[in-house]
Length: 71
Image 1: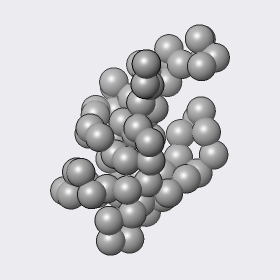
Image 2: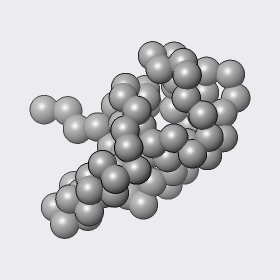
Image 3: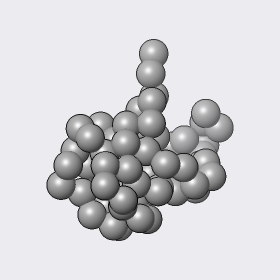
């Protein structure tokens, strides 16, 4: 089973973005699948690829769940 993690985009450079989450340290991800993202957007990340844009509300709900489960 694969688990995608919510991250917020902090900086975009071409098809790459610096993101952060309360779960993990800053990391660089690939935006090739979702080309129309901007700084501040929340995305689900799987294998270093942004796979889905999500709302702030949903991102917070996922973070709370992950923090409780200590995934």
